[in-house]
Image (cartoon, rainbow, N blue to C red; front, side):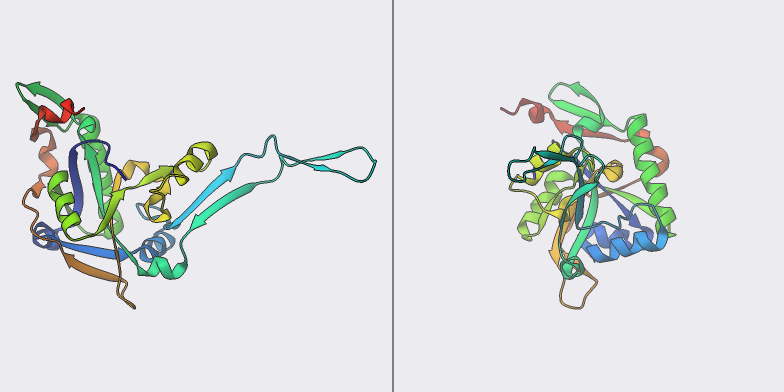
Length: 252
């Protein structure tokens, strides 16, 4: 799965784990644990359908034509029938699939201005509100204060690649847009592990995936120090400015 553009990753980290994450120690929890969390808390950032993709099939013009000898064809309309198509991994696979989540913010999400060969990106009002709303939801769900960690996308992806970990942005499917969803399913990148309902699209999630050892619900993996990792002050997001070389906009 390709990233939309050059950008940064955001991870909301509980205070006691800040040094761990900056040192490159990533925590992976099973897909199963996220669905169980949603069932316990009834809402929030967790998804009870992790590893499952449910899509409604349009039946408005569907019918069955019945043939019986020389009798007139009988048509049975199906527009009152609710049909769905389901793609999923097994419960055992949910237990053994560990994920570590980030929020991916491409350059296009920032307020940008160009000065000579540098693009300066700042957190605009809408983006600040988006991050802070997600921070508040995460803290409510965890019951703990979290810090906002930011890391350069090139830095993180290089470490993930070097450690041979699977990764990619989550595809948010529309439960009622059958044609678009089927087009995505037919791509080589399709996996229910990287799919969530569009109701969670505000998460802008990027997933790192690993196989958990038998009997383990979580694991910590060291991928190497996050050299570009910084902690952002939630009360001063409007003061931060990120510089990008403008070669990003000159790609062929």
